[in-house]
Image (cartoon, rainbow, N blue to C red; front, side):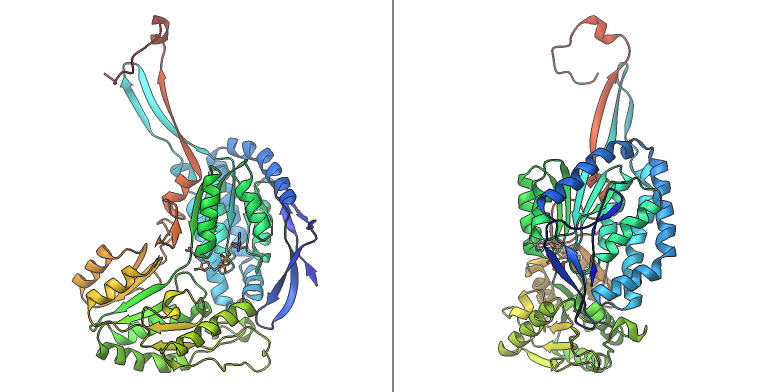
Length: 499
Ligand code: NAD
């Protein structure tokens, strides 16, 4: 049994708390490693190392820092297959999807190579007689991030790439379900030239998270995960005076108008609903066809596509559509919610409950499910299922569909499928959701735009990556300077406007 470590001060360090969590191979159900769960003392050791290392890194000029990121990109490409294999083995997602996970993180590293440009301050020459005003963006110091299991490469990189490009040290507390790739990323970044102590990985659970939230040296906390934990971390982190951004759960609606290309909509729904076993915060989990006729046509197109889905382990080849869910507990929760849908009167059109894969009977595989005639009072509508379960809620008009999506407490992503530009424009303008797709089912913005939801899907005012990341990971300092004579004339006692 492999015993994983922390990555502190440039070395793999064994856990000292005596507490461990099991890391499964979700395809076989076997425990393949155990991951140490850090104590408050272990977290404090990493914080001390980071605090010592950070001023030196912040003093490196931004272009030289960017060169380390350039080299890191090269190494990510060099080791892409190795990283993807480790990722699939612990997470369960297909091999091409694991590469996508790394790629979408890598793209944010590439974007952060532009840090020298992003960190340039502002300057006003001659704001008053002999007076200049300029602003600088300075690193925060020691920063930290807490990440979910579902994108073990992408989301850590979304946090640590901008943090480090800005001159901060970063402590990552990855998900305890799939911690190997984050450890590999920290090693690779140092191979690229990052000084020791600037990126550390401290594995753990609530104790490690609370140690981050309460440590006075840590200046900012980024979190991605479920909404209840996001809310908790935001509250505790903010009340301790930290800068905090938390991204939570989702329930993404896709509206299908009667004029939509129904084949295109059905293809999009199958990919967005069942890809990665539905374990994506941008997965579509609610289809909202407008009108019964649209709904009937859509279901007719969906059923054969869903029945054809190939579910299997990542080792079974690139034509596998999706793999197992992450744990037995996740599987149990998903099947429990499916049962609640049946009990509460939804129509289970595709029933994956009996799904079993020969040779992988102990794996955490869940067959695809499709519900029709779901109503907003049902648990399968209200809760995030995070599994391969698509719910169809029939709306009788565009207005009703719009209201449905707007009334849901989650607001991460949404999409509309239509051929009508006016409807699409109205939807994009009115919907209270952070990321909107028009004939695009999973509208994840690219690295140079920002990513973030609204409502209970996000807490804090800045998004991930894009220009917001450079704001989140720096403080603005504004200097008003006067040279050389004015001070000799004595003090200035009145708060004056600039002449
Ligand atoms: P999770 O909330 O269970 O765990 C996320 C992190 O929080 C992990 O590192 C975990 O160790 C830690 N954690 C768990 N319980 C804790 C507690 N009681 N106290 C302190 N820390 C705790 O989420 P998950 O199951 O790993 O990930 C899936 C969730 O993440 C889904 O809800 C999904 O929608 C969401 N997600 C959101 C986004 C986004 O950008 N909005 C992206 C990816 C995933």
